[in-house]
Amino acid sequence: MVGVEKVSLLGSLVEQYNSKGILPDGFKSLIKTDLGDITEEGLSKEVVSLLKKTDEGSVSAPVLINGQYNLFFVRRKDLVESDLFLKNKERIEKELFEEELRKVLADWIEREKAKLLVKFFF
Image 1 (cartoon, rainbow, N blue to C red):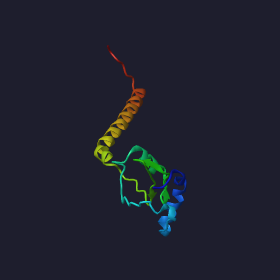
Image 2 (cartoon, one colour):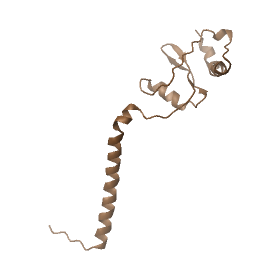
Image 3 (cartoon, helix red, strand yellow):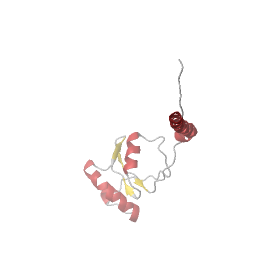
């Protein structure tokens, strides 16, 4: 296991490992796992926040998960719509359209009122 004092060196070592495949002797116990294509669903808020701040081709800051330090090398960031968003996309579009339609209608009514003499009888 890598000690806490070595955590600050991990970012540059992971970048070096990704490019050359070589780790110094003190870091041979590191485990590399390729997560492949992942989405936000199923990740903790802490990890999602960390990955959003990490640029493509960069290594994230170390994060402590279950007593082990983890770093993420972000190979590629594809912004995709989440499953939850896709399920609600049509409803959201309809609501936005209706809201815009109400504004247009209200503006049209005000313009027509200004052109005509409108009397209200109560």
